[in-house]
Amino acid sequence: MWAYEKKLQYPVNIKNNNPKLAQAIISQLGGPDGELAASLRYLNQRYAAPYAQVKGVLTDIGTEELAHLEMISAILYQLTRNLTMEQIKASGFDTYFVDHTTGIYPIAASGAPFTAAYFQSKGDPITDLVEDLAAEQKARTTYDNILRLTDDPDVRDPIKFLREREIVHFQRFGEALRITQDNLNSKNFYAFNPAFDK
Image (cartoon, rainbow, N blue to C red; front, side):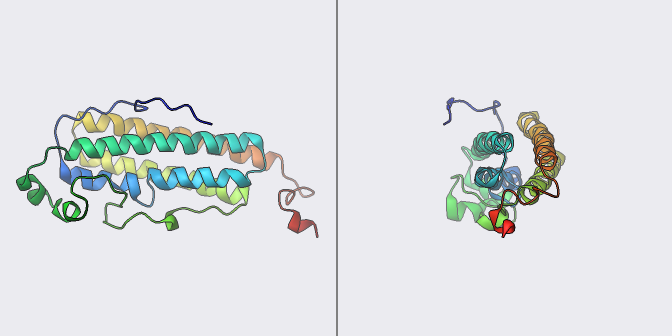
């Protein structure tokens, strides 16, 4: 189904480690508005999408979110590689280090581990697509907040790329919502759910 290229969607080349910043960016890995939740949300919602174009959008974006998960993991790895114990203790990274050393583990910046409660799949295409629009805006806001926290150009560059992709995804979900709404009217509004025909 997928062709996998063994390279990141956008290059990540961070020269200076920064475990404190990694603790904020990790939210885009396993936080409530992160890439893991987005990929699972869209790849699960696509099964109930009633139109091929909408299924295609959900599949495309869900797959791209997996590529973003790789980028975030690369950023986290590069920000935390070769840390000294002094850096770990001084940055407050010690609480993460105790449980995970410097391994990549999906948690929010608050420390809460990833949970499926972060995403929804309702089976109603309008409900799901409106959630998807909101999810992309929340992810964009998180990237905005990350950009406010760093002036390192090596970090800012891939984060700006990821932020731009959230905007594109928002636009594509808007198109998918229009396709869905254009195919619904009072006669066929519930056509995708036979239970309403009884």
